[in-house]
Length: 627
Image (cartoon, rainbow, N blue to C red):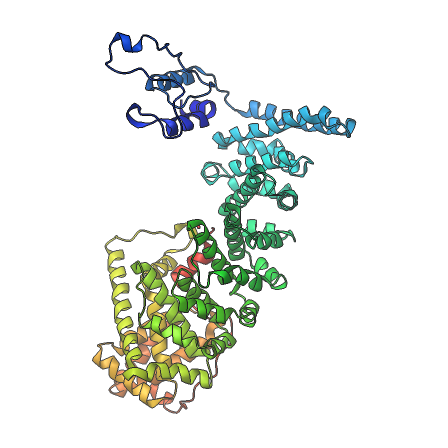
């Protein structure tokens, strides 16, 4: 019954419900086409009012319809015959489509200069293409659709001279690849593979180049359907889908041009920014290609206008977030990080951070990404007075965040930036960073101890909730194992921020400033922060670093040894802590006695890329699709 209503009544019934007014009152959309009889007025009141005929399916609906008419239409829907699609019917549909295509081709060749004579054949072909939308209710037949060779025929119509037919093909493909439908398809990967084998990517880009969105709403809807199809395919197989489309040379330039379109914000512009973000997240080749396309510079120009102003609505807000996501994905390559600094991206982020508007937390996040493993941008951040806007955020001065999760995310990126500055800055820049922690009676060192206590408690609470079964497993779609799932859950509880805080403590203690090191030792005792807890967090951090991060791991463990030597009460306690770190990190560490022979000089900055442990939130952003 519901299927009949959907196919036969469709939009009429939706319009009907919107037009109906409660309690029989007149709808606000317009005056009623008929006058309803007065209730309880006696026989004279209704004498001159003709009796209205019963409504039927397919008739034009008036502004106001009674409940009896609605029930009558529902009863009619029960009696209407609906064709059931099976293998035989599907085969007939495919054969009919092939005949319509051949007939249209013949008519176009025969009457090339007389469009009126082949117009009917194109109308028939268009209707035949739309019939395949009904296949969405029979996902078990997708395999037969592949065997019958219908996929190449459908995809091939994207190159039809009449763009209206290509527009309808996009609509059909967007419906056929709908995630809810594909969830019931026995082997969805085979269907996606059949689409790619039929040269879907190349033909899609060629059709996008032919469509002029400003010509009509139908053309704009066609682009929407195309982007929807791409998103649906990426939802099934993100890596393969993005790689296939990126291989088409004009795909990325079209997306960049679309997201930078002038004029008022429109739906397709927002959608294109989301698709670009999905492609950049899942395709390393796309990030490499953006180097030649000067993607950093072009995307930065797209967000520069939001330095002082906020988005006008939720649609524009989503666009701004998508553009920042695209730039964060590009920062995975050091070439893009260098380009970001050269086109004054660091200066723009500092200014946005100082405005404290909608773009401010997004700018903090992007600044964090652009400075990870990039000494040049770290130096530039300090030179451009970035510390002036960064440390008030660190001290929680200014507007409060609306939610606890927003505040935690902001603190995560702020501490990550400070850790990068402590690691990569040299000369005057690192001295200015250290001076920030020593000013105002070491209040920022006290803030570090407070954050250690706060996030340690948060991680413990998360562990307790997990033991009691109060935490849902939210990352099974990422195909992670139990150990990685546990690590992601702990990062969501604040483990990554806790790791950054403790790394900052260890680095500050080894910057060669005795006053800062002594004050840290005192605060560890007065604030109740145990040296064992700091060492355990560092050991866990180092245990998750891969081979490419060997230099960072050795550096941090060396700093930990020096801090243990300085702060431990006696040698036996220090030796025990060293052994604990050795067992936790799985790395052989020299004894405290041997470490006393080492000099206390600051090691040079390690400029290797990829030697960090990303937070649970960042790891999800890299693996997820696409809003």
